[in-house]
Image (cartoon, rainbow, N blue to C red):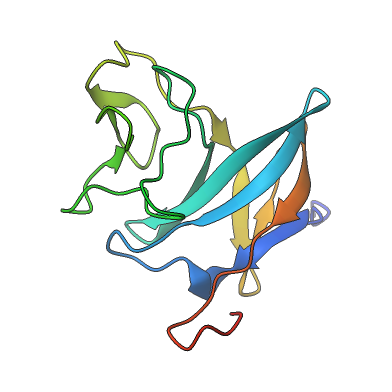
Length: 137
């Protein structure tokens, strides 16, 4: 029997990531000694995470903190110039990113939490999601 692998550092509660194009959770990771913004979203019942850097210009994607999806909830979209990315792979779906995509971060969902699993990244800060009453989730 294989040993269970420790899940890693908690990013947010699994309930904070709702299906249907709702807000994602922003967090910071350290990669190669640099602190960079990242985000996690839920799409088709699975959790995905990426560095929060558009492949075209390197700017953060969200048009308002945690808002990464287009109006239909089909694509992640860069608020600066409209580059669109598939939410399950981060691959460019259209716009000026010319085939480049988002950089994925390995995460897992376990015991009601979302954990960072990337071997080459360290969680620096996780920003808690707030519910409609403004309380931490």
